[in-house]
Image (cartoon, rainbow, N blue to C red; front, side, top):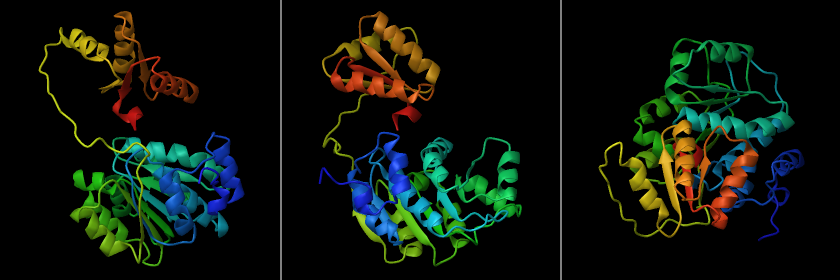
Length: 307
């Protein structure tokens, strides 16, 4: 299996080459499991945690399909829709998509709330091939007559379980009802409980189900401790915890905090590296190598970077 390539799974050469330029040559288990089916146009239900490589598992067949049947862009009518629960994830998917879409001359647009809708509306009016959206803002734009899903050929739901947790399912259902029944649909979720099961039953037709997690399976048992500490004792307590044998991951809310904390830990003799959105790809790789090799026993990361 170690010799498995993207080409062998049926991924078009241009896309394999785009991945190779990013140093990605070996498919992850979920990619190897789902790609032959998704590239053949089947509906796919993939169960895989964050980090299992599912983003490329759905982006590759999406781009392959749209580029196989080029069509003129139409105002307000995207050909593909990717729904994700948070703007961070939407942005991340769009970044992963960019080099793949470029090989086929396809355009994409992110759509989420919390920012002015002007640029989103302008892009839709001009016509984009792929919309990557949070459900709320997209529904809003459709309600205003600024977008339509009647030309969507492929729909992808990422982190469906997370969408359910955030209360987006009614919105997701209304959006899926607006996409053509005969389109291809792929749903990815870490868990397949009742809420997600309802979506699967209603919107996927004869889906192929693949379960694949990242190579590191979850630990069977985990102890949780909550420490109530004053602001002043924050650092001493963290130094204490991070200095213990074994590897430690510390999550922070902001990039700024991750940077400062890593600096403070190092100053106290606890080798730590930082991981957040402001780092270049090279810096991220160096950070992870230092952590994996044990050169730095502590990783300080923002929630977003951690994914």
